[in-house]
Amino acid sequence: MLEKENEFISREEHTEELKTLMEEVYFQLNDKHKAIVQVGRYMLNLKVVPNRTDPPPIHEWSVPVLLIDRNLGKDDWDLTTKEVDFKI
Image 1 (tube, one colour):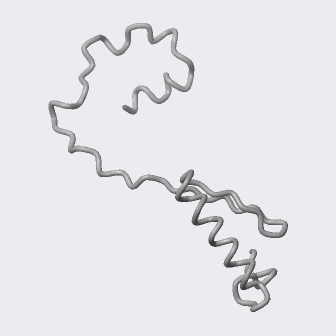
Image 2: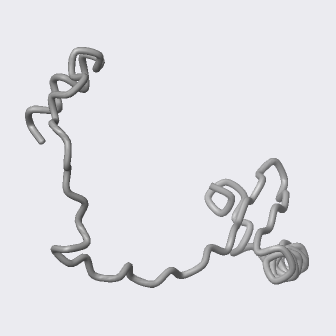
């Protein structure tokens, strides 16, 4: 929206403002891992999220097994749980 309405990146008169904005974003992201900057009536909220690794593989022996009767206390369950339970 910012570029579409104001041509913020493509117009020459915004060059200095864009440079200042990019420096501010760069410093905030490096310092706090997030940046909140205002450009005209727009607020940019940026955040650096960690790149997580894949979870370890799940083996057959890693899956929990129910050791009690499933129907124990079933009368106390809410209607949604009663309807979903038989599909599991």
